[in-house]
Image 1 (tube, one colour):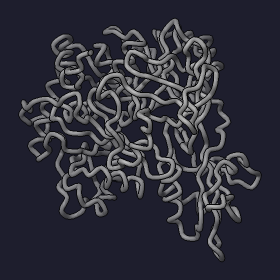
Image 2 (cartoon, rainbow, N blue to C red):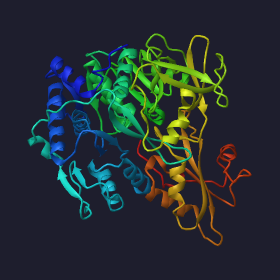
Image 3 (cartoon, rainbow, N blue to C red):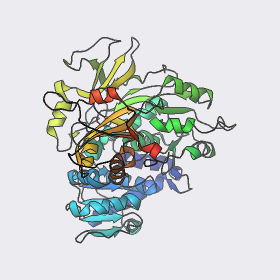
Image 4 (cartoon, rainbow, N blue to C red):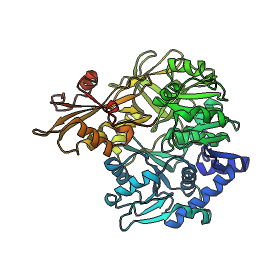
Length: 534
C-alpha cells in the first residue's frame, strides 16, 4: 500500500522549503510575496503564537478571512500546531453564521475586515468563543468576557517545535450545503486534503514552472486545496487575488505569466462578457479548468482565448475529487474519467443501489481505496453520515452516467441543493432565515434557471403571508438583503396564496420548479435590490 505518512501540510511545506527556499510560493496581485522558506518559518511562528494563546493540538479554530497572505500563514500555522481550521464563508452573517459558529464548538476565532464585524456581531449568542484574534482592524465593540488579541503578535512569537499531525488527524471542517437541514460540517483528514491537491498535480501535469492564478475563496476546497495546495505540492507559484474581478482577469493572467487557473459557474459568463480585444491570446495559459465544462464554452476558451487544454474534474467536499479530465484525453461535455488509482466510482439505481450499465443515468456513488482520503463524517451528525454512506458507498446525490469509454457525464442533481455564484445554497437555511420576517407564514426556496447557460441556478422564493398581513414583496427583498449573504439572496420573489404540498404536508418543490418564474414574480435584480459585483 502507498505510504501516506507525509500527506500532511507541515511535512509538504518543510520539504518544499528545503527544495525551493527563496523562490516565491505566493504573490498577491498587489505585489506582496511569501517565499517557500518564509512560509515554513512563519507557519511555525503562527503556531507558536496560537499555542501561547492557549490553542492546543486538536482544538477547533474558526477562520473567517478574505484571501490574502495572512490566510496562507494561518492555514499553515494551524496545520503545524495540529489544530483544526474551521473555514467560514466570509459573506455569512446573522442566523446562518451564528448556527455554524455554535456547531463548530470552537473557542478561538481569527477574523478581520467586514466579515470580522459580522462574526463579532454574533458573539453574544456564541458563548463558547472566548478569544478573537483580530487580523487587521475590528472596530466593532466586542462583548464583555471576550478577549481580543492582535494577530500581528505572531511576528514576535517563538516557533512551535511540537510534533506534526498525522495523515489521519482532522485538518479542517468545511461547511457544505444541507437540503433538508442545516449546512453540515465535513470533517476532512490531512490525507484527504493532500490528495485533492495531488490529484490536480497528477492529472494536469503540474510542475515547478507553473503559475496558478487563484481568485476563488480560500475557505472552500477548490481555492485552497485544488489550487493553492496543488501549487505547493508542485513547487510552483500562486498568484492570489482577494476576489474575482472580470475586468482584471485577463490583465492579471497576462501580467503575471499565469500558466493555469480554475473558474466556476457565473465567473465564466462574466469573463466571456468582457469585450474581445487583441490581448485575448497574449497569455501563457496552458490549461484552464472550468466547472462545469460545457461544450459551447470550451469552444470559446479554445477559439477566442487560444487556451490549449480545457479540462474539468468532478467531486465533492465529502468525497474528494474522484473524477478528473487529463490534457489530451478530454471529451466534450464529459467531466473526465474515474481516478481509479484512489477511488471506486459507480453509477447505481438511487432506489435500490444496484449498479447500472454504461449509458444509463443513475446516482454517483464513490468510496476510497486508501485510508483517510475521504471525509471522516459529518460533524455531530452520525445519522447523516450513516445515511450518506449506506451500503458502504458514499451517495453523492448527483445524477450521471458513464459512456462505454469510461467518461462521466453529469446530468442533474437529485436533491434540493441550489448552486449560485459558485456556492451551494441550503434551501433550509434560506427558509429558516426568511421565516423570521414578521408577516411570513410559510416560505419555499428553490432553483430556477439562471438563463446564462452556465450550469448554475437563480434562487426563487414563494412566500405565503399570514392572514391579515400586509406583507409586500419589497419587504421580503429588504429582509433578505439584510439577513442573507449575497450569494443566497433570492433573485425572484412571489407572494402566493398557498404552497403545493403532499398528503403528508411536505412542500412539493418539484411543482414549484416546474412552474418556474411567473409573470407575477418580483425580480430583485431589475428592481435594483440585488445588484452584485462580479
